[in-house]
Amino acid sequence: MNNFQLRQILLEIQSNLKCMKCGRAYTAENIHLRGAFKNMFLFQLACADHAAFATITVVGQSNERIETKLNVDDCIGFHNELEQFNGDFTKIFKIIIR
Image (tube, rainbow, N blue to C red):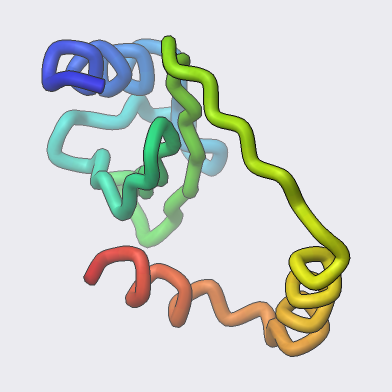
């Protein structure tokens, strides 16, 4: 995804998403890119009026085809990670930002 496409995403967020608490539109200064992986982007939207924020994931289209085969060990590993997850998204955001 190039800068133009990323800018289009930001404009779409600004025009279509509002704070769920007060209904105010998000400004460019209140939209923060927190992480990116391949064609997935994690944004944090903060309302200028109060401490409420939202987190959204945007998945872009990709022309390339990615094929990944999972095996039993992959599934077991994922299951084990989920069992150990304590719901602390702050920790996840710190990992993504780095």
